[in-house]
Image 1: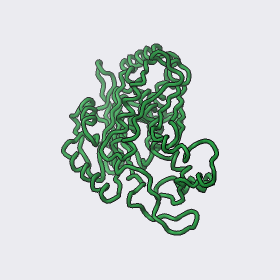
Image 2: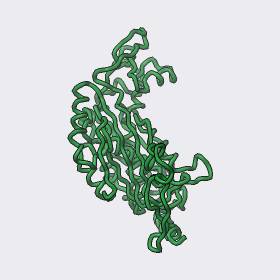
Image 3: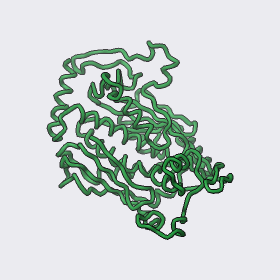
Length: 388
């Protein structure tokens, strides 16, 4: 399976094309819309979320509620397009109209200046329109499709927020997968530790008051993953490496770790490796999950546990210093509509990209032309690994 996304933040619509989805997978627009709505929620979101009510439209690859096996095209309309038709229209305009909302003051931490230099743009809006996190709308849509596929294969995905602006919650070992999922959905900051939710909100409120932004840490868990997805035979076939790439491809994400992650540098090997156990009922398991569900770049049957670090959003309402690309004078950077904190929403995006990589790995491993055949193959493979 492969996919592409297209579209600008203030263009007419966003598009995704996905190829390689099995024929016969149940799929409704409502399945996608539910995930798009989750992405738009969360404490700290800005004014754009009051404008956009994202809804998907299938224009190919789905018929009567099931996939056809041909490429699937999904479209999401930008409601704000009506206010940007002259600025972002495809047709040529007069010179004075080209200057409308032109951006010449790059924002520190954004793609503005580097993208302008790379593509020889005199208007940096050409960069920020595509580099905007609005693009993650379509990756959530793709992830929703993949979560649908995984759910049919009895694989569950959950995401939650561990930390915002230095305030960190605790997830106890006795908290079930279902409880983590439910608590995250009930929290405005998507944190399962209700004792720190108020503190997180206060940090976000203070940042907004100061014209500043805050980042944080999100965690994605994937349960009931078959053993042996990915491979140790080549560096680019390691599934944890693919997931790490997917996480750091999300706007503003700067780091990723699995299991105990960077803490492994401070622990002896006896506290990091997961001992192997076996029973007739379950087959091979691990007595702990310090490695986050991976050994040798392959899934080992334990839940996947991956965390991503999101930097504060670089668009500040109290902007930092920058340089005007025309005059080279020092200026305050341009201000675009933004959030004071998008970490809760980012946890939904992280869920989506991880689900996508797991789905791709499954479709690579098994016969994936028809969904019923895929489902049967996965079932037989689970039996084989249990009896090994």
